[in-house]
Length: 434
Ligand code: ATP
Ligand code: MG
Image (cartoon, rainbow, N blue to C red; front, top):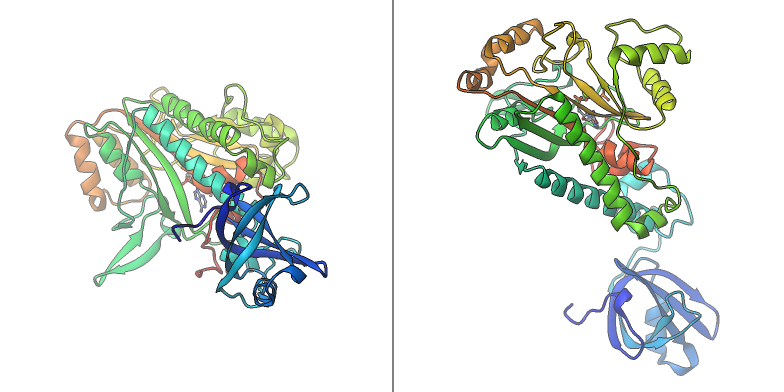
C-alpha cells in the first residue's frame, strides 16, 4: 500500500491510487459515479461508460456497497463533485468484496437500533457521527493525560486481578486464579494510595474497572474505564481542584481540536466549555435543595444516599457541574477520612454533571489506627488487607484523590443518551460478545 493516497490529499493534476470502501454508486445511465470513502473523507470516481473499457466499468460499478476497492487514475478538478475533485479511473481492483446484504446501513440512511449497531461495530463505525464519538474520546483521553502531567502526576498501571474487593462485595466478579478464588478489580483505590505514599507522590491511572452491576441502566457498564488520581500532601479541596481541571481540560480540547467531529454530531453550535468555578454544595444543602424542588415523593432525610431522581432534580436546579461535599461518613467507604470537627461528616465529595455523578473522591484516612477502625466498621477484615494497611505504619503522608468515569465523561460532554455509545464493545447484563 506504499503508493496509496488518502482521499483528502488528492489534488488536481496528481496521478493517484486511492483505497477504501464503496460508499455509494450513482448510476445516471451514460455516466456513473462511485463514491469511495476512507478515514480522511470521500472522493468521487467518474465512469464515462462509452469512453472507457467495458471491463473497467463493469468491475467498478458491479461491486456491492462497502466492498473494499483500490482505484488508480488521474485527479481532475470538478466543481460539481462534493470535494471539488474527481478521479478518472484507469484501473479498479476489488480488494475485498462485501456481501450485498448488510446487517446495517453504514450510510446512515436507514436507522439501526443500538443492539444491532453494537453487534456490528465495524459497520457502525463507518458512519461519520459514530466515528466522531471515538475520535473525541481519544482526544479527551489525550487531553486528560496531558493535564495530569502538567499537575506533575506519574501515570501508573495497577493489577486488575486481585484477592479482595473494596467497593462493596455484591458488585464483585469472582474468577478462578490457579484454583483459588480471586476477583476482577472494582477500582485501583488501594494501589494508587500505596504509590501516592511512596516518593512518587502524585499518580494517575486510566484503566478498566469491573463491577457486577445488577441492572442495566443507561449510565452503568460492567466494565468501565476509570480515570483515577491520587496525590500526597493533598486534601479533598485540592483533589476537587484537580477534578475540575481535568473535566475542563477535556471540554477545552474538544472545543479546540474536534470541530469536524462536533459538526458530524450536530453539536457545533451548542457545544460549550463549562464556565466559572464549579459550585461546592454540602450534602446537607443538597438534600434541602432536592426536597425544595418537590420532585421526590418522599422527602430525603440526613443519612440517605441521593436517589437518581434526586440527582436529576438538583442537577436541573443548579444547571451546571457542581460538587457535593461533606457526605455522611456512613455512606462513604472506609478509606475516606472523617472531618476532625465532626466524625459523622466525611471529607468525601462527588462531582456531578446535571445528569449524573461523574466523580467520587475525598481525603484518605492515612492514620493507621483509624484506618483499621474503618475496616471493622464497614464489616471488612483488616487482616485480608494487611499488604495495604502495613504501609501506613512506615510513613504515610496525608493524601487525597478521586475516580472519574471515563465513559460518563464522554457521555456527558457529548450529551449521549446511553453510556454504551461511548464504549466500543460494552459489557452489560446481556452482552458478553463481541
Ligand atoms: P453510581 O452511584 O453512579 O453507581 P458509584 O458511586 O458506585 O457510581 P464510584 O465507586 O464512586 O461509583 O466510582 C467512581 C466513578 O466511576 C463514578 O462516579 C462513575 O463516574 C464511575 N463509575 C462507577 N461505576 C460505574 C459503572 N458501573 N459504569 C460506568 N461508570 C462507573
Ligand atoms: Mg460514587
